[in-house]
Length: 325
Image 1 (cartoon, rainbow, N blue to C red):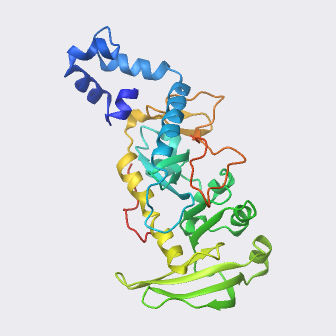
Image 2: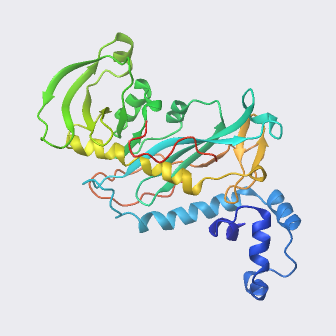
Image 3: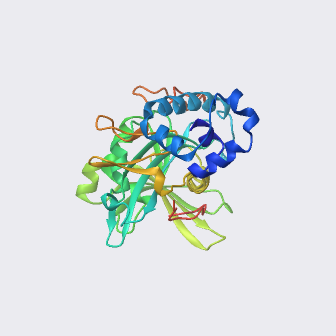
């Protein structure tokens, strides 16, 4: 199964055909007998999923230092995470336990991606009806890190918890959010940035949830001719850098396109929750929640010195558009 994951095999038949093409290497690979799909299926069903979870942790621990100095396209030495989810469509007649809509079944994979190396540090699989914003309750914010997310995660109470933890966020505002301007700051010409303002929330309920000031950056995308409005709790970076940070989140869409695929054999039922059974995840039992990884408490800030912290451990509905919603 490790071989299948690392060589991007897409089915049991694909694994079987690939291995049978090099029978002279069986002995060195540790195989002592005939390779059959049924044998692989039985092994994948009975083997403890924690073997693959631990293996994934080890690979992440090795990989993150290798990509720690990769450029992000912005002048920033902090850790930058992109947060998003993708929906895995299933056949309702085959998977009635994953009911999503009247004629559709689905599960949703929530992912926190380290943009240096495009390495996932947190993955949770839920039923397809779970709203994205609830994942913010599961993430322990890393002080000094940046979390880039779309406006589906705009919840001021949850974002204020990130702010109190010393983490920074970059997101987009929604129509109907009332913001009152306190200060306006100068912006460089010919960069696409039209305004840079310090604002506060204008309604009583929102102000209770987020009583501190926010930064609002307006940017005009000249290629598509539309205005984008960003909200962040970081006031020192140039306004253009805030816009570029949001632009970098399109990498998580590419991650979903290239690394997240699912076939009916990859999905199984988990009591009360939904679990994705990929080779590195394996099987789940009643005592284990379907989570691959999460960042440990007390993670060290890397705002000034980017050193990897300890490892944490489809149809894709959106395309890889840099200025995606």
